[in-house]
Length: 238
Image (cartoon, rainbow, N blue to C red):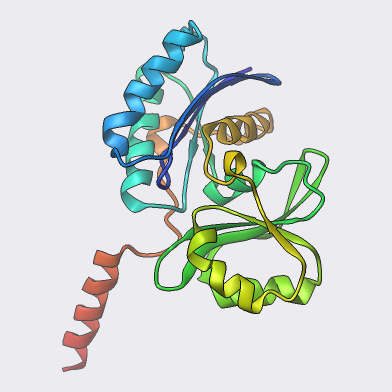
């Protein structure tokens, strides 16, 4: 089974192709260009370098959220467009799950941290038995104080990864009551290889949807939506 993976949920733009147990190619960039400029050219380059015939792809796995609202929309639109054009199903892979899957096989509790602003993180808690992943706390949007308190209550070693690590480093150092570590540079950000590999597992379980049905999972309202709700509530109370 061959899976095309896409991730534009955060600062990283990434494209990968996984076939059964092999990562055939991956193109990942963590730099300033917008994903609308990079994602399709990256896909074209991966296809060229791996001699990929898109007609041989079985499904498209995309980081389905949470994450950057703009980034998720770009990834979703790209996946939907390809899915509709190629008549391929979509595998929506929870972003935090895919980030945790970078550390498949790790002995410690795994805690992805994506910066959600306002001292909040998109996060979750995961354990691995070999490559089998168990979400002991499913992806959520919570304050950094809440997830650290949860970790402390479990009393286990934990490894953190994600773009939230440098943001919350001072808080972790001050409040973590368990031994902890940070994932190394080549494993600490979103990667389409992980999206595709986890998407392959989900596809084999039948967890796919039609391209027209796919929509990102934001987990919380955008800033514009929050401000509009605040204005409406203020007007209603007058």
